[in-house]
Image (cartoon, rainbow, N blue to C red):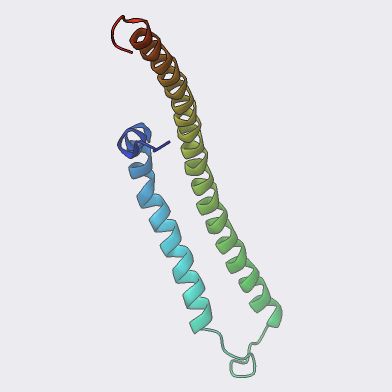
Length: 121
């Protein structure tokens, strides 16, 4: 059975999707910048002597924690959108089943009327 994409698109809460899109893009951009910055700044430890290696480790841990928080916020936001889409698809599935059942009933009713009408068959 073909899916009516226009009807499906009408059921998607586009206002929610559009309102949260900038947040998702911003979070993804921050994450991408952090990962790209980390890769470009990756230098051997021998090139940059540090007075306190423990302080450098603490700073790196803080950076990783911030990156993990950003990533988890982005993942949470994506999961919420995914849950909304699953709800919409579940509703669409129910409508398709209902329309299929109604179509079968109407087909049977039309066939019965055609066969019952004298001189048609």
